[in-house]
Image (tube, rainbow, N blue to C red; front, side, top):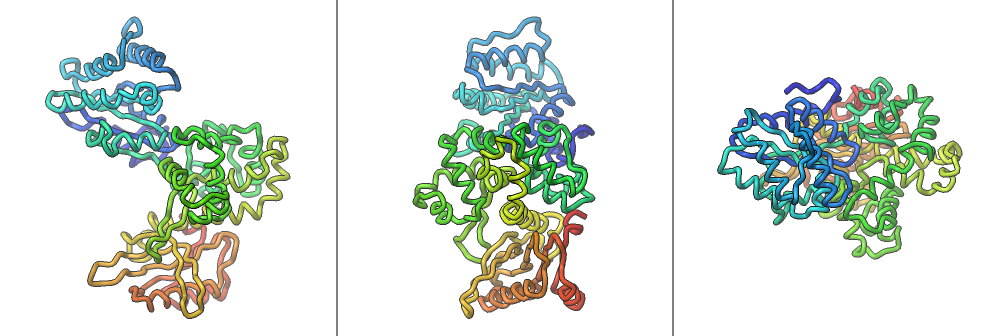
Length: 489
């Protein structure tokens, strides 16, 4: 099936879904589609069912009885029945549903999509077991069933196929729909020719497609000069749908009860506290007391833990959703003023904070993503581990923070190879002192026994490089200077 023109990007996801829907198998197949809210999962699955004549059902927050009635009505509309189906139990509904995929009733795969499946599983906990029974039954009998379960509650969807869950081992597809990367997001917002504006937009809204069309009705800043007015009216105004979106993202996760504690954890990370101890100290708790909130936020794909590439066992927490970072760092501390409509004053007083706590960390993550994607061949180690880390210099008793690094794992006969060390600056012109820090870090790693032959020293800057550094780079093969144009080329 060809991807519809109205579906932007998502070529990989569409190929996976189309391949699953048209797979030549005589038995029932199950797929699980997940991803954070606003990623366009429903948009994709509706397009899929429209192309192949499948059945789409989007569950809502309702009681078990009402959900069953809604399902019966939708199924009757799909099959052309003159009246809604009245199922006594979900057992009857599931049995009837799989009956639609009987080879005697037609040819070709029968695609069935149950969207927002966590809503159904909450009011009908027996549903996964019922689906397991039917899928197992049609492993020995022919069936055209191609069932897709979709949901945004990441902890619930992740648990469908985990541990001793009924559906474990039954799925032939497990697809996570992620945000657009920085290049696709810039094209989607039609600012690919304005890299600095693209980074700022990404630092606020990330690569979430729904924010442009459904939330902002294509309200896009035309130039960098329009960004300040845009962020005040489109994000920080109490009249905007995005104003409370960060709060809703947290409240919609089923495993989160005490939202104030989780907001405090996210605020701690947004303020620059990236370790478990730092987060605990910021919110006034013991480190052991925040293990559960951290795990829940990780399961919800709102927080991630990046391992230090140079120090085994060390890690740093990072917020995954840019809008939450923006909310915690800029909006939440001034929430009362924002509700009074003082967005312009709050934004004017928050620009330095935005650069240090929002745009800067976002730009660092963007540069690491570049080394995982388009820039993977830059260091000559396309399969190397990309991350950040701290290099401790014992001679001077100082530490050098490396914003981006590429390290190839040890092969047993050879030590780990450091292929690239990178310095990333959002609001600072990079010069020779920054290069000297990278050079010193490389020397320290060499002294520790790591392989550094051919290690590149990469400088990523959003505003440029000094003339002295450019002249140095012209005379040396181990220096790479990467600006915004290269990141968005």
